[in-house]
Length: 455
Image (cartoon, rainbow, N blue to C red):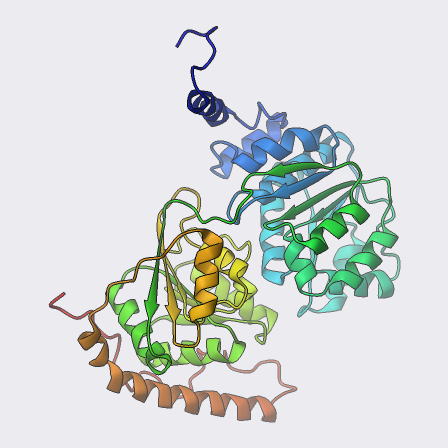
């Protein structure tokens, strides 16, 4: 097609637009050279769709509503414009980023520090579960960027002498729908009252709920909407399956799948802290390198679990929905919904932990006789019927005896751990939840169960 010719069809026009998008660089978006170099060093070869949409508008000083699916590069879409502005007008306590979970706050801080390493950017992470005094000292040094969960930030605004956000230039609300779903509305309202009206605001959310719309009206001035995905969807390279199984055999089928797909790394989602802990113990008793992550663990243990999994020292991470949003762990091969999510939208976030940044991945959802309606809602939301994951039922049943033995040991350990916690509630140096020497571990399988021959 000649350069001055119009595209012949809408398809060609879309193709041309896509090609132009492909060739865009961070420099084309208006990002300063020093930050473009930082992107190169981080291996960000080219901007993602949400970054192409949001960064130029943010650099023009507009308020942004960013709607994009999980794993789409949202952090870069707000971090780069903020760092760009910070370079032009250096100032302490320049930006505040609000996030729903502690782990996400640490991850955002890491990205800010990596992008701003050559310009000396200082960040403070203000979240629960960590000593308040050390946070107060960090805030006293007046960092450039504060990344916080709403509850703990309010705590410091009310109780830390000399700390205020009256000079703040940027406010970011990341995963805004989740912040509001976790009932942080009161805290967010309080924060909005004590920061300057004359500021730039970026609101990023995977979904546009009524609460998010209300927050948008309260917090943003004449915002521009950047929507990369208007309907709920999962990425193309994600293979999604379901397994319809009797509730009492869930553990056995899980062990079968871990054997069948041995060599992959797994994130297994459970609905409660207790079930996460129990299933981690069960799998460890069968010789799998499983580690839990849930809200009842101390912050240091939560970060420890995450770091071990990220470093590939453990191949299975069992988690509640505390890990379903935003966490970027590049090497997750398989997501298992051991307990089906109650809210269909959480399915999108959970399975978004795999098949990230162009890689492929698998998601397998366990559906018991009690979950049929919830599963139908998920299929309706994503607009597709999922295929069944192929299994050999007689091979699954051969595992029953060993699994029930492991279940018994897991229950004993949970009970022992509960009693130990009662006795040592004041002792912060308690043994690691699943890695302590409780002494009944690995009696079941005598090491990792080998993948069965004959498939």
